[in-house]
Length: 140
Image 1: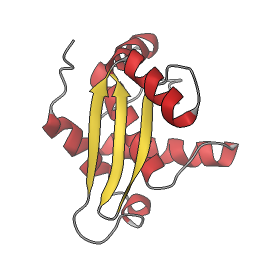
Image 2: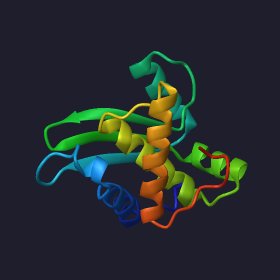
Image 3: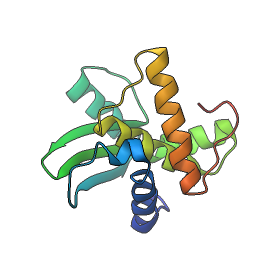
């Protein structure tokens, strides 16, 4: 199945997220890039097992890059549809959420502790608002 998400949409969500002062402060000077691969659950499970040693499906994985390539994101479109349906918001909103989530990971944010989760949630919601994407209550 082909995901009905355009490159322009993906780029605009990430560019707007990059304008948040906290995010901008972590970006390298000059142009930089991120590769986004939209795939399915099977591929995410394989990548998760291969690179993280976890034999489980996940919705997004981030792979650090170097120099002006921040890294790569792999997003399961199957998970996008499943989670959008579960939370009751459009797939584009869920996809934007996963893009921003992965982007924040590439820039060094994590969510292992409660304070880290609160910070990532705050940044994610702020970034999505810049793209006029509103998460359903209870999603984060």
